[in-house]
Image: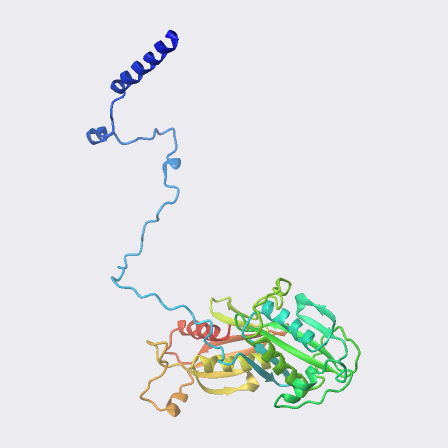
Amino acid sequence: MQSTIRCILALSLLNVASCGIIQDRSTEYAQAEQGRELVVPETYSAQKLSPRYPIPEIENARSIPEKFELPEPPNATAALDNDPFTIESVNDQTWLRLYTAPGKVWPLLDFFWAKHGIKVAYEEIAKGFLVTESYDPSGSNTSLKSDLQASDNVTELVGGITFQAKLNQGIRRNTAELQIRALSSGVVINKWQKESGNSQLEQDMLTLIGQYITSDSLDNRHSLLANDIGGESRVRLLKGDSGEGYLELLLSFDRAWSEIKKALSSAEVLVSDFDRSVGTYFVSYIQEEDMTAWYDISASEIEKRKERNISLKLEETEEGKTTVRVKILNPQFEVEKQDELINLIFEHIS
């Protein structure tokens, strides 16, 4: 017992004594003197003493303005329509354009077939391709027949119709394109048919599918398996050997010609003239200071159309692609105008 008391007293005495031994040094930094500069001996390297993320010296003597306004980002929806979907045609090809990604369209397309009692016989999801079994309009599920008859374009279904569907990535960002083939043979053909089987029925089917997919009653669904539909972008902005920008479209010449026309219209670019036989648009690009006001508003449109100071040349390659190149026709224009115009077209087409 006494030994325990002695131990407690010793610890208490040591604790009190330590307070005097360990001084408060929190303010000593104020009296600190600057030391000598660190000198690296010649036998050693100073490389390890350099900053890990050095700031480079500025060689440009140009002064930075006090106020700087950042340019607005490109409008990703500049070329989109107000309608939830559109039916478009070029020559004998018709497709449904939807303003949503293929990964969201594919599961809704499955629901469309199931709603109308149409079974899928074959599908390749990664390619966005499917073939249905033959449809019997006199069967137990006649909703497809009644929906077609209720549409503006009444189409009589022929017994034994087999449908093919081909879903692709759209030309513009976050869009999808769907084509339908109505084949009357009744035989399941597991290869996409480029030629139309029944153009009126196919167009009516695209309208029904567009109305169904864009209806507010459907939940927002997505298919991870359909993410790869369409592959790479169908519009690419590339650089030529001399550094000039040009477009490469994974489209036929006819389709590319139509898309460039719509992009020019959407960008409010004045087309002076065109010659489809040589794949050329002639553009009046007059105003240099303000990209949003391209033309001299004091001049009439007839006068403005005479400019023809830039041309757009479309050429189809052996691989089935189409290139779009810009050429300056007005010697007073700087070469940079080529890239300005090609970038503007790319913004309104991709």
